[in-house]
Length: 596
Ligand SMILES: [Zn+2]
Image (tube, rainbow, N blue to C red):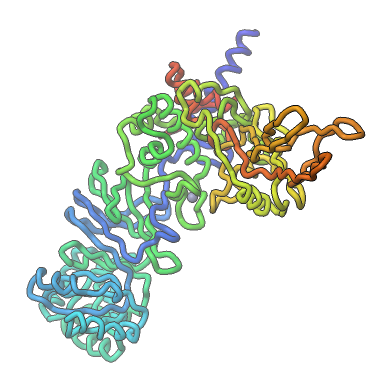
């Protein structure tokens, strides 16, 4: 009976977690992630794309699937939003248009070559109104670009057509009637004609369209900045996409990379316009394609493969734990190291870290069935830290453990020294809310069992204050002020030596802090003060005792919570597997295989 119970207790977790798919609301069965590549401050006015393979433009269905709309051969593309533009031309060949394009002033907005039935045009600007566009005409004339016209956003659009082929056929008929039609998609294929600045032009256009294609109904297309224009490298306007959901682009073969703004990525791109009418680019990619770019940025790819594998599992776990982090912006994780994890596309990849990602496919760290909070740091300095000693909330698996491995691996942070001046120390006190005046002493008041300083006091001429936990390390992330590598340190003051002359000898004291004096009442500790008056038999002298600087000697780099990267390297070099590394730094986690 006992045997049966033992078997059950061993088998149950395997059954529950070995193929974990759903854990307390966290989806573990979907390996596809949405990564914000361009958004916020680095959203784009226009997008430049390249592919060495045939591509498909499409749209994202509500369930995340990509619905292909239009294919094009390999090459380059630019994506613009609709706007009022200035247009020069037509020119007889692309070279003549390129000549004009090269003279287009950057101040008049981004410009591109547009190949139309009349010839090659140069179009530029992202203007909101005709008036704004017109203001740029003198500048273009000064650059020798004349005969420029303004194109607006008013157009006529046909009724829906059954297929892209039917739309192309209509466009060809219009061209032969001298009308420039564009493929237009707003859920159905249509043909749009016009891009006029006023309704008078639209009215005359309607007459011409009814004559050329009498079977079609033409409706007015109002101004809309959120329509997307896709223009090929040779100037063809492939189609206009009315802003439904995101416009997507993918290589016809999944083995090929595409580049956005000259940076190559795996997966599918999605382009949407943000509130400022700038393009946000989201990469839809498999978690492992994302991790291949992340892992070598988080840990040097030259490190031991088992350490890299531990880092891969940590990064993968982070991704699952933080899915939907940027749901309000329409993606899961951003590309910034300061917010999520640093992601930079294929160029960042390295064969070693790729191997680490591939050999840990589907492996993540779970606790109670949820992705664990896999905090990590560069070097623990010898002992990792309980999470509640760094932040506030205790987490069962984030407890301090002995960690001699970083030093064994030759960590460059095993020992460090940093000197802070009197002025810097005063600034740190002020930054943390107290003006202590001239700093007389900096003292470690208490330490956690790991050896990290829990309370550091600063005593000055005008007051005294205590800094707790990480406060002395990063009081100001923006200036990096103080920026001690860790809170595992000792501190000493540097004071000009004080010369004390007695009847018998001359002594050099390293400052007066901790000095004892013999008084009439007995031997006492000298009180902290910037200067002391000494009365001799014949002369009164003043001894100054103001530290010029404070020297911190410490070990480790980072907060000390979770995995030490140098420690992981040390363990790997001693022959430990990535699983052993993970369960050493995250006590009690379950290393699970999830669908991938
Ligand atoms: Zn983020």
